[in-house]
Image 1 (cartoon, rainbow, N blue to C red):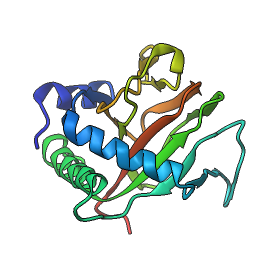
Image 2 (image 1 turned 60 degrees about the vertical axis):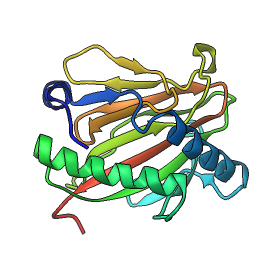
Image 3 (image 1 turned 180 degrees about the horizontal axis):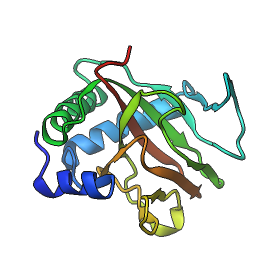
Length: 200
């Protein structure tokens, strides 16, 4: 895959871009089904937040359940993971980000107002996460479901992105503060964090 000129320009000037229909409807529904099955199986766990050198759970800051997605041949999530790998290569080639490995995480907000307060994905004082890519697996999303991703680009008004099925959002991890507004229905997302080639 390749980035469009508009995507490269948006990443450079605003720090983010969105792409609808990232993998196509059939593949998106298959990946959603596997993500939903994993969420319903009970294998996800409450996410923690970093406080200094420690991690703790605080639902007033972050209310999602999470689990890592490893390479899985012959599965829809495995195919999606391969698309993220292709995306990382495209970001390196098209936007000169020099990306290396990435981690992929499934997050489920169970509803009931679960949210994630404003934050950045790159840890302070470390050069690690360079790009964040989020793919949404929410079929039939409606405004009353909430769970909107709100980006805070520097020197620009906030931007709200509905978490609709097969929507991809890519932003610079060190540059874009963001938050998940309260979700009133189950909200599924897969997030890839891309690291620089010099990261361990």
